[in-house]
Amino acid sequence: MRLRLIAPLAAAAHLGLAGGASGQVTGSLDVGAGTYRPDRAIPGGIASMAPTLVYQGGRLRLGATGVYSDAPGGRWNFQATSFTQLRSPRLAIFEAEAAGQVDLTRHFRAHGTTAVTGELRLYAHPARWASIWLGRGAGYALAFNQRRPIRRSQIGTSARVAGVELGFSLASTTFELMGGPLRSGDSTGITGPGTSGRSANMSLTDAVLSSRWRIAATDVDLAIGRRFSPTVPEITIWGVSAARDITPQLALVAGAGRSGSDPVTSVPGARYFVLGLRLKVGPAPSTIFSPAPRPDNTPFRIGPALPAGREVKIRAPGATRVELAGDFTDWRPVELESVEDGAWRVVLPIPPGMHRLAVRINEGPWQAPPGSRPIPNEFGGEVAEVVVE
Amino acid sequence: MLRLLTLGLAALLLPCALAAQDQRLTERLDPATAAAVGVLVDSAGQAGLPTEPLVQKALEGSTLGANGDRIRAAVATLVGQLGRARDALGGGADGAELTAAAGALRAGLPSSALRRLQALRSNRPLVVPIAVLTDLVAEGVPPDQATRSVLDLARDGRPDDEFVALRRQVQIQRRGARAPDPLDRPALKPAADPPVDR
Image (tube, each protein chain N blue to C red):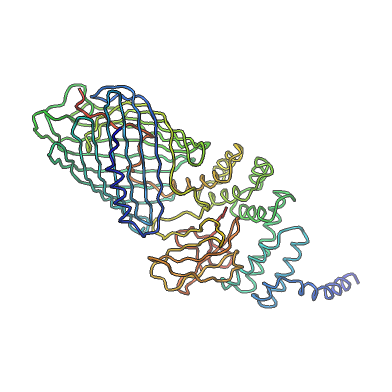
């Protein structure tokens, strides 16, 4: 197995850029085997290894994910994606996001593709349980020493109904196609090298209905959609996957589906079924659930129990004084010390259990910590409630 | 005559009660409020209810700048909530569980949900499941649905970590829609063969 290290290196570079910021790195490694039937290649058994690494800090999210597959006959393939997402502060019901993505594909005895795309997205959250988003992006794919422009428009909506997250999206991708006319029966719209080199514009529109839910320690994702194009036959695309936790660090995963081609990376569509294990790495599950973090708020965290106590960390950029009070201090204000980049900390003995607390920044009113969900109290103010295990 | 006796007894006992009052109350509250809260705390203690949450409520009011009337009213309300929580969970519940249950009732959850949860947890701590249930409702999840989700975990004998994970899952879901994420792909979907393989 010749594992290419491009994606991990890209992730490391990203993480290096993010060094010093307060955030969390999580990762997983999926290892499995199954069957694979691509539209225009040899079907058969396949072994897969898929690492994923994600950094989340404030409004910034960086990540890299890849899939390395090994098929009989020494054929191997590698796909990797590294991405950067930066969200704006929320303004009323609106939120914006800038996203950049680099996709790499490398194959045994074949040229690969490198694609760079960027996208701006606008979200509207008219209700707590529903959102709408619009996206517009552009980029290029580089293959066979030729650069092909790509444009993408998306619109989508999602809602949470009876414990199930439902989503619907329409994504239209326009790209310059390399090669000659499409072959009969090809659902992908992707052609290989050695053809005429003539370019043609092509567009694909995917309408996809997706759902996601969790039941009895199992995360289930289900998506079904239809691909429309003026130049290639319509196809139905679908995918179902499930991940059941065996331990907090290990899960059994399974996936099956019929994917469409990816016009960005030139990867053909395929039918597949895979079964494997997911090893989760990185920080252990948080020992606290704090009220819902809002994307436009700085985080608040209570660390694990240490001999000296638990570290309470609050990000309050620009603050000159930060105080904390809660039932674990008998509601006596405790001053935090500034440590780095807008972060403030204090170490306190906080026993396990449910606690009420509030913070005061720059002698202002007592309030729920940034990033937590405020709970109005009987005194006309607000506090937060957290459970510390 | 009986009233006179009662008043006389109260007058005799009041100094003792004040002397036994929690020092934190006398230090942080004005004398009248401290005395009134002290009476509520004592009566709750005599009724077998946890008193520390009541003291904490008063201290919270003090720190947040509330006046004496509001502090007294808040403590009295909490006494009632703790009493209803004990009615729901029975005398075997500890102070932390009663405090969590009082929060659940305050959030609008029915006593029956707490009783069912307690029955399913059979002698295991209830604080985290109740807190998760309360938080889900506060997050906007309909009480019936939140109760069903938490009871499902309790029925399966899941540890506290999984209740916390449920809470986190809901957090993520309720952040609203995101555009398709690079990580949103079927689990282990294999990388493709090259399009030129044959």
